[in-house]
Image (tube, rainbow, N blue to C red):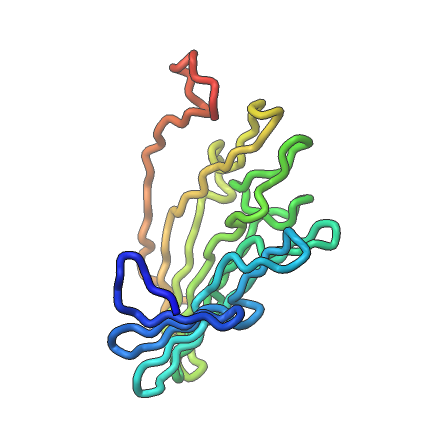
Length: 220
């Protein structure tokens, strides 16, 4: 058995690729256990698990909440690994929440967001990174839509900071850009009527990679 630091008096156990945690109220949480929740990163001959996602919650009355995920699996020279994973659905009885996410552009590094670093001759793209953005959340009951939320970003508008930024550092490298959430829109059960969107604005602060006022700085 395992325990947390600091101590929480939760009961934690592991069996193969499954972690189970029981809190002090008797609720049980399961992490891993299937291909969509146990992330195997195979950089060596045997798979190495590096992340376990929550896939089952059960209370003391036996009521269960199940969670599923969508994974982005990459491969290179017959070696595969999970680069990223995102919630796909949460189900509790007749209620279900579904999540939709996507990338922006297809590259030699796979599907990426515009703000993701890309490979150069000397520096490959990160093996593990976030490469999708959340597009919508739909809430359904007994198969019927109750409401939906959509998310809008600075994609498709003129924003020089969105795209990943190239630099001559380390023999040529790309740094991440800045993906900005601009609005959240709520839709009704008819999937067409909307409330006024909640909008966001930002104040951009100077980044070292663009620091024109510090002539002695040589890092990233």
